[in-house]
Amino acid sequence: MIYYFIGLFVLVFIICTFFLNKKNNTIKNIESIKYFHLSYSNGYMANSNTTYNINCEDKCVLELKPKYIPDEETISIELSNDEINKLIEIINKYQVIKWDGFNESDKDVLDGDSFSLSIKTKDNISVSASGYMKYPKGYSSFEKEIDELFEKYIPENMKKF
Image 1: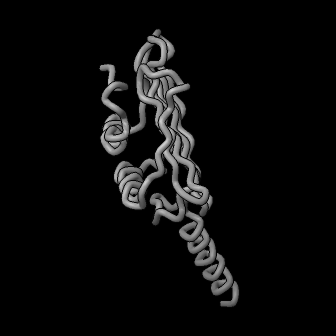
Image 2 (image 1 turned 135 degrees about the vertical axis):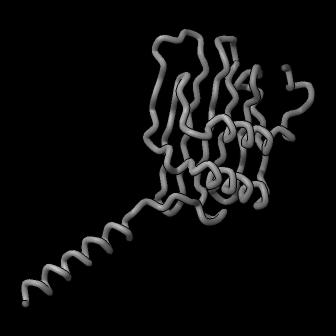
């Protein structure tokens, strides 16, 4: 009888440990964001990449490099809490945290499209994903929503295409 209770206790302990250690698939609040990076390239032309870097130390600052613009013309903007909340909503909507470890490429394609994504939070959530002509589920819509969130910061003279 005692072995039955010990076995039951061990089983309950293992199940509880599994659920408590299960990776959280959402980012809860704006205070947790530490770093966000999304860069994607569409083709082979010079400066054909778009880059979003957000660092949240004392305040959240976006460094934005629009497509077809040289790196030297990167724009820096302080983001509002509403914009960071919207970013978190987009990340959670597409379950981007589940993309961690995605690293796929189509080696048969030359001059294709690629992306690189990195997210770090203050509560130790970390996402690293990249692809070349291969993408995680929902990536295209995610990229579009990120573009829409920050496109207002791109001056008209920098909107080439």
